[in-house]
Amino acid sequence: MFQETSLSVVIPAYNEESGIAKIVERVLAMRSALYEQGVTGFELIVVDDGSVDRTAQIVEQYAEVRLVRHGFNRGYGAALKTGLAAARSEMVAFLDADGTYPPEYFPRLCAMVMDGVDLAIGSRMSGAESEMPLSRRMGNWFFANLISFYSNVRVRDCASGMRVFRRDALMRLYPLPDGLNFTPIMSLRAIHEGLKVEETPIPYHERVGRSKLSVVRDGLRYLQSITWTALGYNPVRVLGTLGVIGVGFALLVGLGLLVARLSGVEQLSGWGVVAVFLALISGVAGVSLFNLGATFNYLISLFRKEFVRQGLFGKPIFNPPLDRHFGWMGWVSIGLGTAVVVVALAMGVGGWPIERLWLWLVGGAMMILIGLQLLISWIVMRKLEELSQREIAVQRDLEAVGEGAMRNGKPSIA
Image (cartoon, rainbow, N blue to C red; front, side):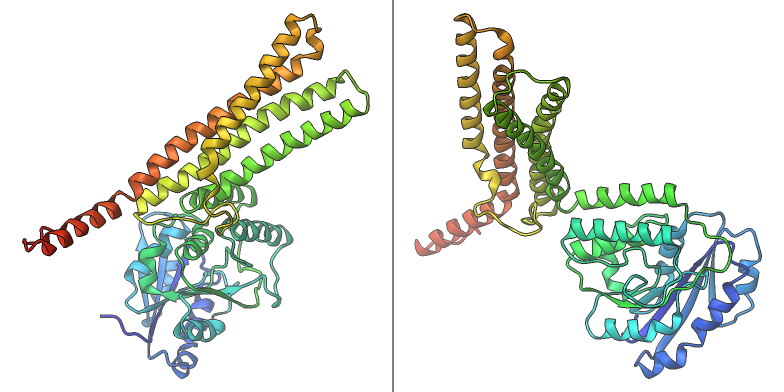
């Protein structure tokens, strides 16, 4: 049974013999400060993630520490999950074994959680003294802003390895990865799951020993996992943004062509042809990506059995939603495209040179393709919407039948 005011601290360690003793002693020294904060129970768990040095032997010298060992190196996130599973307290914390994070700030983080915060994060990017290398600072800034964009919530330090949170929040945060991308995915999931997340500034010092973070390899892993996770919550935010960029580029090229034609330019240069070619691709692809994102939102609603309405801008803008208009928009686009093609073909039959008509033919074909995309997406989304609401509709109809039966003096079947 969990103690409501107790804290379990988890330290994942892999070949940290040069600094593990110091960080363990600093964490243990925090027990009195935590007690003054109202934390009456405490335990420290070190997870040795398959170290080949003396990390485990050093930890074994501390009777107050629980040591959990992996037979082989499984990864930072895997070590944390092992420690979290072994934790016995209602509040759980973790920090790295390399001495970069100050355990002296645990009382402040615990106070935040005890005051109603679900996930309290020690932020290295909020103005406190920091010795973080420039390359990692830039990477952290980029990924924090990426998560902020995907979640529509301001995040300053998405990869902080010092956190305190309620243990019962884990069921809403899992699944989490086994690698170093554990922390940014935790931040992203926490925000999308509606947990109360707050950051507080902490100082950050250069690590003891060699860093295990690869800027390129782990940076790419961060990018892939953050984007992939965001697709599971609000796909239209990710795909729809790419779609809007594609359509915007196509409209920009179209505006340029209109201005050029009004200025008396009748023939395109080589770069002009390239621009038109790219605009055609980006226009069709942009509409397809936007539709795919909106369709995915309905799939998520169907899977989670709840109405998901976050949208491209992170909150509802159009009422009814924009995708409800895709049907008539599709027919209009097909109609306009067909009209342009028919007129252009008629002019060609009448003797107009093809070099003056090809752009109209291509533009008309593009409008027809976009119209078809909109129509197909409208049909799919309406059916997904119907399926996602089917359970509610069945329950409503059964209740209506039950009420009707009672009014007629018959037993209710609901």
